[in-house]
View (cartoon, rainbow, N blue to C red):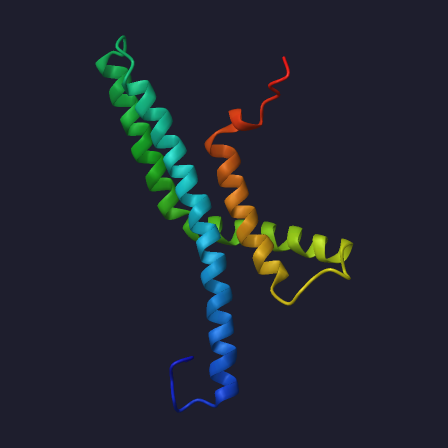
Length: 133
């Protein structure tokens, strides 16, 4: 619609703005999904590299991983809506708290940053452990 020359300029501009918002939100959601998948793959891979692992356990690990990925595929829309709603609620809470400091795209920026931050935290929680011991 934003490229359709038969549409009014205002309509094309609105469509372009909406597309940009959806692309940013989609990026955040995909970051969450891939982070979840890669963390599970990494844990399974580490278990499979154990020298004392027997064949039955290895088979069960791989079957479990297959079922996990399959379950994510069937739950994609639910996953997407849940993440989107949670991030938007948190962003709106921030806007209410800091009502004088927000800009028009603030909610979308918070949504994208939240997805990045959650992925970063879950990828290596040891970065945030207390080193003072």
